[in-house]
Image (cartoon, rainbow, N blue to C red; front, side):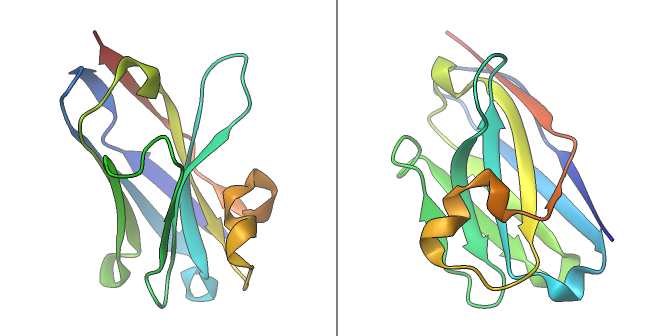
Length: 127
């Protein structure tokens, strides 16, 4: 089993920054990739960014590219999401997911790809 714990959410004004963290524990040696998704009440969970654990290859949704940066610290089994130039439309609950086995890059944008999920952290951007 793998446990994921997100932190770093909060309230920020438009144009501000936040850094989210997701710490993984348990059977993390099987980690292939981790991703960040977000969800607004009444809408589906949407892809934000992902990173392959070994090579560090990153992928971003078009809506956040250039503003958000995903990174990982292998020694700490932690993935980060640095969010800059935040906008009110970035308001959502942010979840991290872990994929344990190889998967093609275009599949990393799908929620069904991920084997484990954290509990989520709320990000609210005020205008």
